[in-house]
Image (cartoon, rainbow, N blue to C red; front, side, top):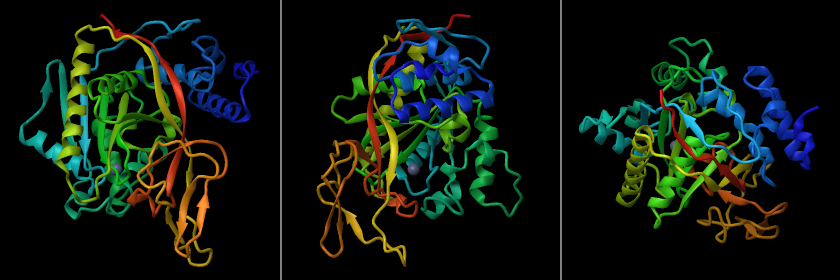
Length: 381
Ligand SMILES: [Zn+2]
C-alpha cells in the first residue's frame, strides 16, 4: 500500500499520489514508499512533499545518490551550476525576451564569473513574423513523446526546432543537459513577474526567494505546474533546473521599458544567485508561498459555432491572483448577463491571455500552497 494513504488526504491528493507512483514506477527513478518516509511532511504539504525525492533524484543528482530527509528538512549539498542557458523568442511576438537575447548577443555575454552562458533565440522564423509560432506552439513540443517523434522536412517547423533545441541544451533528463535554463515570456495578463516551474525544484525556489527579496516593489510570484517531467511540454524542461520568467501585462509585438527592466533585474539576480551558490554561499531554507495550478476555465461559447459569447468580467479583469470566491463574477455575456464562479475558492491567473483564446482557456486557477524549502549549498568535490 502506498504510504500516501497513511496521511489524511482528500481524494484529489490520493489521486495525485497514485498518478505520481505510476510515474515513479514507469521511470524506475524512485519508489513511493521511500519517498513518503524520507521527507519532511508538514500539514497540508504532503501532496507536494511526496514528489520531491522523485524530482530530486531525477533532475538534481542524476540518480547517482540517495538523499534522505527525516522529521526536519535537512541541508542539501547540490552539484555546481556551471552551464546556464537564457532563451527568448520561444513565442515570437513576446518582445522582452527577443530584445533581451539580441542585446546579450550584441554584447557577447557568454560568461558571468564561474558560469558559462548560452543565449538562444528559440524560434527565429516566428520572431521574424512577429507571431507566436509558425506551424505549432513551440512551447508545447518538449514532451518526451514529441521529442522522440520521427520528423521529416515536412514535419511542423516547431517540432523540428524543439528537437534541435533539445539536442543543443538537453537532452532532457540527461547528465549532459544544461544546469539551468531560463526562458523569457510575456503575457497580456496582469500577472507581474512570475517564475513558472515543474514539480518541485529547490534551485528554482531558492532563486525565486532571492529575486523576491531583492525586488520588493514588484509583485513576484512562483507558479508550480504539477506535471511529471516526461509530460512537461515547455522548453525549460530540457534543463536540469529550468523555469520560465513570465511577465505582464504587455501586448504582443510590443516592448515596454518598465517590463524590460524588471526582467533584466530578475535575470541579473538569477546569475548573481548562481555565482554565489557556486562560490560556496549557504542559502537558508524556509517557507515559500506558491501557486499550484489546478484547472483551466474556458469562455462560454455558442454550442453551434464555437464562438465565445462573453468576455472576462470587469471585476475579474486585471485581478490575477486575487482570491476568487463562489459567486464572484467571472464573465459578462455580450447580451448583458453576469456569470459567476462556482466551486471552491481558488486564485485566477493568465486572465484574458491573448494567446489562450485558441486554446479554449479564459484563465487558469491555482491553489495557494506553502512549500518548505531546505537550506542549500554547493557540493564540494
Ligand atoms: Zn510565451
